[in-house]
Length: 286
Image (cartoon, rainbow, N blue to C red):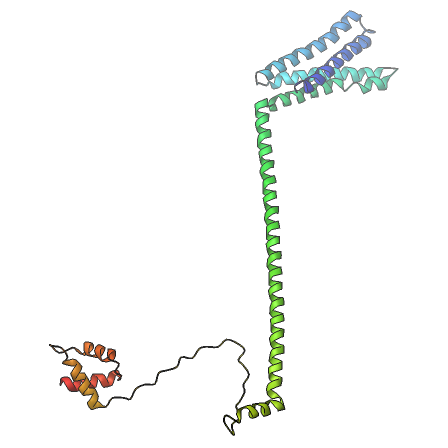
């Protein structure tokens, strides 16, 4: 992965240095001896390489120097300026020389990109952990989506089943109501018919002459059972009640209390209101 950023920077730097050296020798060779021009070109390239090497050393140590970086960019700008000046003064192929004048700046930019990559590079273990976390998050999201889809499908199925069951119940109730309505209409027709009274009269006249029973329609709806009350026995007279209270009171020794007497009075199946029973007790106990 490191070679993807360092190789383009190295190649661009080499091309820029070769172009800078060639331009300096060709451009200054006409005004001074070519060995002197060669020394000037090598000085520019050497200064560039020296600052670049020092920057790489600081970067390997996790350090950074703005002064060294400024000197390196100065050498790059000088090389680019030499190429631009040669392109502007060249009589032939000025456009071609001007087109390659940006290579030193591009080389410095590539080294800057490579330095940024080194400061943000991660180890294979860290990258594997990040990929594992991302994959786990994708798995959880997929499971959550599948769970939501399954719950939605289940709810839809349940609602469909409830709706269909409700529709069936409604249809059965409608058919039942229709059948009851027809039966009720038939009963009403039979009850209000002219021949119904004659038929009932002819049947019941032999049993109870002169009586025509009333025929009511059956009750359609809930009914409440009616409890039949038992016929109350004849009420006791005051004298009989006094005698009975006195007998129960003196049935044991010592005499019973009013509460015990009232309990035995009720248990014996006798009936009297609480007021009459207490009045009889007072008369007897007085």
